[in-house]
Length: 130
Picture 1 (cartoon, one colour):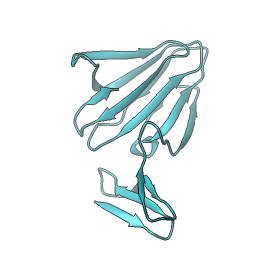
Picture 2: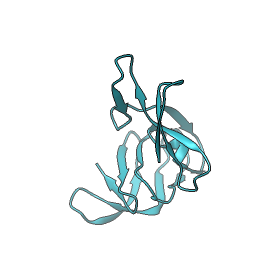
Picture 3: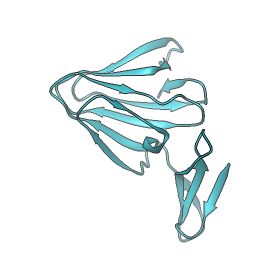
């Protein structure tokens, strides 16, 4: 379910559990809808330890900054989701709880070394490396 919230000028969608709304875009002054994507994140989330991401983290730039290894547990891909993840720290970042398909269509495990990043998009079932 999608809702155009004209009070806050946000495009919102219900979460998978149907318990709350999350923003997927904005409505500009001309009434044009701009959906968040890998070029228009809604914010930045800084992470320094193992973390489970949620639907509320969609469309944010996830910056991991740790000298030690960090595991990011992805939410179940139950709807369209997009994540941009950047490893600023020296520790390796491993992504779990998902099937990740690379640009060749092959299923892969994902880990990021320092200064590496990845754009992930889901189709409601799997995550795709863009």
